[in-house]
Amino acid sequence: MVELYGQTLTRRQLAERAGALSQVAGVRLMTLDDGVERGIRMLEFRTGSGLRFTVMVDRAMDIGDCDYKGLGIAWNSPTGFRNPALHEYEGEGGLAWARSFSGLLVTCGLDHILGPEEVSAAHFNYPGKRTIRHSLHGRVANIPARLVGYGERWVEDRCVLWAEGVVQQAAVFGENLHLVRRVEAEVGGNEIRVTDRVINQGFMPTPHMLFYHINVSYPLLDAGSRYLAPIEDVVWASHAGADLRRQNAGYRTAITPQDEFREQVWQHSMAADASGCVPMAVVNDRLGLGLEIETVKEQLPCAYVWQNYQAGQYALGIEPSTNHVLGENFARDRGEILWLSHGDERSYSVTFRILDGRNALDDAERRVAAVSVSPDEDFPEPSNIFPTLRSAKATQDAERFVEVTSQ
Image (cartoon, helix red, strand yellow):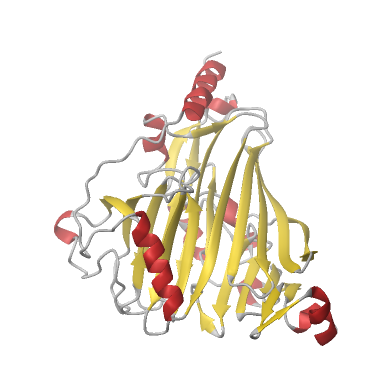
């Protein structure tokens, strides 16, 4: 059944009331045509509940805009949704990624995440490429997708809005990684479901790292907005020590925009519920509005929070990740890089859920608290204890890597 406007309708009953589904909901492909966004293909989803969001086909199928009943959820930065043709990956010492950084979901990877780094390229067995110089957060977010399809699919009396695309990150004498992404939302619903598969289509063992940069802003984010998460340990903070309290921005309560705010990043160790899921949320009690985010701990064992309370760029980023915040060389040294051989793949899923009203906010807070009770203060001291991430699968992949590159 479809829940719309206080009614529960069958497929037939909805068809009787609307000449086309687009009257109340649907997916529409359009192209932006001005400024730095010119030429970007975009899919607009409307569920009919008040949830509207856009999937940026030419920016890795990431989610750009998101609003609910006219209230903004997603961060729109000053860069706009810049056309990837304008992107200079190696520019500004590897920091040019920040000139294309905007939207609710920005995917980081597929072979590198976090800051600019130089790493060994021995695994590609090409004498002209002994090292690779990675830029901030990798390449994938600025690669256009091949759009496989989109539309509406009825399953009995449920209607699913969907889109699927393939993003190929590839180079001769380099990686050949494919991101297969599917985005779904139900008519009448308040959820967005993103499912990803990352596949090595190349024939050399290739490192794989990924995290989701999930960015919210005003009006959901405002002074007093709260971050809810089942935090077992505060692992690390970019501003630890004497600067921990200097900007008066703790881990769980947002402050007003500040002219000279310097970004802060926290890493937390999260607990999972009985099904292995990690629920997190940003809630605005004044508006009765929230966004809940659910990931799978086994897929994304690490979690960061990015606080950018700078005036004109006001944002909070929730960042579930495959690896710790200290970067790729740190992960390589600890044997925690995921190595993908030909045909190997990794699957990921993330659910976005709009929280509408006091009851929904309270329910989300109870769900999070039932998993783990977070630190009861805004400025907990980090432990600097990074849990071991290496799994049996990662060990086998690393052993294959050593064998191949030593021949």
